[in-house]
Length: 89
Image (cartoon, rainbow, N blue to C red; front, side):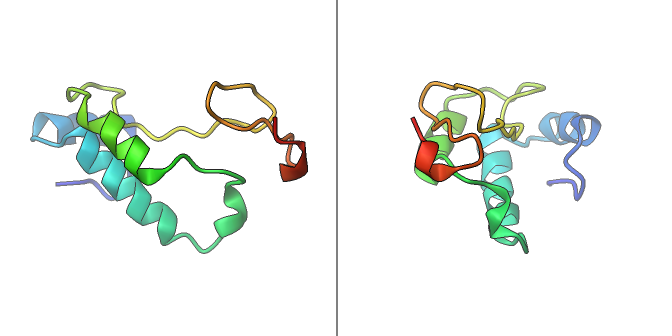
């Protein structure tokens, strides 16, 4: 059901075929864990928290789409580290 490439056009088609935001989030977690470079992310939100939020979303064009936030941008609930975990605020 999930496309190999997770672009907006293929996700729109997958949602039309029954994909849920939770399905997408679970697949993104699997793909992230399979990454050859675990240093890509300084911090990650807890998987259970992300999955719980995804369960509440209806299938929508942007629901469940993975995003990264540069760590020098203040976002509620995420550490601001400026590429240095010791700077976490």
